[in-house]
Every structure is written in C-alpha cells, then in structure tokens.
Image (cartoon, rainbow, N blue to C red; front, side, top):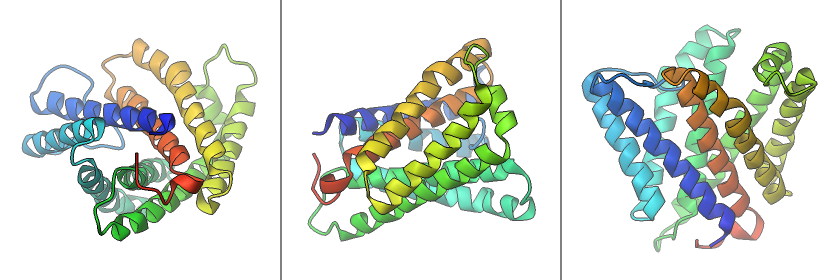
Length: 255
C-alpha cells in the first residue's frame, strides 16, 4: 500500500472520529468543544445519530472493514447536509463569505470521501464507485478554486490569521490562494496530481501545526476553533489520498 494512502486514511479517520466525539459531547450536555461550522448541533437525538455515524465511519476507515461502503454513505451524507443546510443560505447571502466557506468545505470533504471510497478494494461491480471518484475529484478541485478566490478577495483578513512571528503575512495569504488554484488545476486535469496533492496535504498539515493547534491551545473550549482544526486534518488526509490515487494509482484496485 502506498505510504501516503495509509497516512491519508488514518488522518481522515481521526478527524471523523473526533467529530463523532464532539457531537457526543453536545448530546450528553457535557462541557467541551461542541461542534462548530461547518457542522450544526440540531436536536439531541439527531446529535447522537450523527455522533454514531461519524464514529462508525471513522473506525471502519481506520481498520478497513466495510470501509468502501462506510465512505460512500459518509460522503453522501456530508454532501446532502451541505446542499440542504448551506446552499439556500448561500443563494440568499451571495456577498457573505461565511456560507461560501462552509458549503465548499463540506463539498470538499464529501468529494474527498468519495475518492477515499475508491481507494479501498473494489467489489465485482465497481464502476459506480469509479464514477463517484471522478465526481469527488472535481468537487475538491472546485472547492479549492472557491477557497482561492476568498484568499484573494479577503487577503488582508486572511493575513491576520497567520501567526505574528511569521514575516510577510499578506504574502502568505496570496501565496495560499495561488497554491489552491495550482492544486485545483492539477487535480482536475490529473496532471502532476501526485506532486500537487502531496504539497497541498503538506500545506494543510503545516496549518494544523502552526495555526490551528496554537489557536486551540489558547481556547480549548472553543468549538469553532477545535472543529476548524479537524477540518484541516481531514483535508490533509483527503489530499494525501488524492496524491496516492493519482496517475497509475487511479485505475488500480487498492491496496
């Protein structure tokens, strides 16, 4: 098995399991970092169901048992959630960056989950999953373009999120936008995809270490910050899976 694929699966599984724990904390009315965007809490009963779904999916992906079907169901649920809850909000608030961010985070995660599903061994009739794999790649690529546009439009705000000890913070905001565009083009065209997706995953991993972990350490009960941390972990996992499944990897059975 490709080493990047194994790392990507584990990182994604960890993120999904943590989302499950977050919803369990909310449902049990315990003190802790309850889910923040792109998730919403809902009723306690729904929170328990969502918690169970994330935990089961994370465990299935981590151990490789029924992982293809778990990934497909999870990806479908994430996409449906985004389209039902955030697409109408985006349509009514086109100039608000918030709905754009959360909707396309969900589209990227859902699409990435379809790619992850295709990375597991295929049953005799696996053509449907291969089609979803292609759809997933385009969803990730489109989402990266949206993130890039936001980095260009709101570069000065993005620069404030860069740790103060890093010089030229505005430059890194623009650089990240350009990196998103380059990665999107490579993924959509399946051209130099392994390199682009590996670098993309490395960038998300650096964000986890340099940006999100310090922010969570400063406010450990802030559910928005904690959720953002694990969204970045999940996107790092998705990127590494894309890298492993690129080129000749794309049409092989896995691993």
